[in-house]
Image 1 (cartoon, helix red, strand yellow):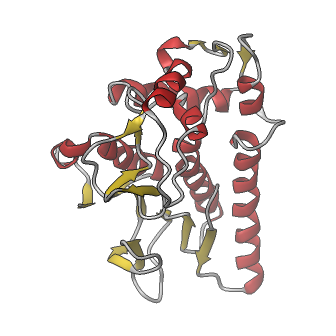
Image 2: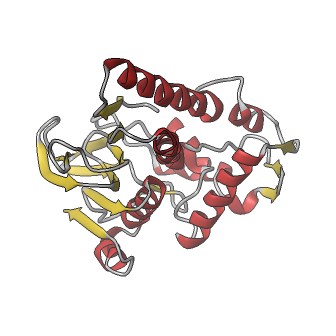
Length: 275
């Protein structure tokens, strides 16, 4: 998941807590092993190494691809799971190494879902192109783990995968969970949110950015240009029923840049937007 993952739960016995933790860990690792772009023996690796050949995918992968297509259409091509190749030239490590305009232009030939032939269950991409499900995988994993915990029942739980959260039900002792949203300084909260049940997801550049000549470059890239989205908020936090829904809206809001607040106000969710 590329981030700390934790489960907080209220259980009657230590053994019950350990059992729930093992359940969540197993599902998180299953999704990590299946969809991580950092591994060379999973479905994403097969797709990315196909060199123009068609690849048949399973039902779970097909559902995630369909969801990615929906986001691609809703965002007017701003959310694009083929844009991960831009990481080859953009390294958001807090430094000042901004790529040249020519290197960005050259990389754009490998970006664009419109170049992909997706006819469920068959996916075919031009050689050299890749997919990266990192933009939706973590939220999907949180929701999957929450569903498994609800099936077990009996113990209020909070799942936190790198700041993407789901509370299965309110805690018994405190009536609500407290979630901190990070500010400019690492580990210093900008906001504390009370959460009884449901999901929170945050998109932002607190940890991933470049800074050169007084200009801060966010890691939120517009795949149509290859450059960071101009005038994007520093962070957007969304409260919603599911983590996938919260993550989708927070990401789309960031991609809207200067129009983020206008977009968020039409979505019927509670949100916090930090400039």
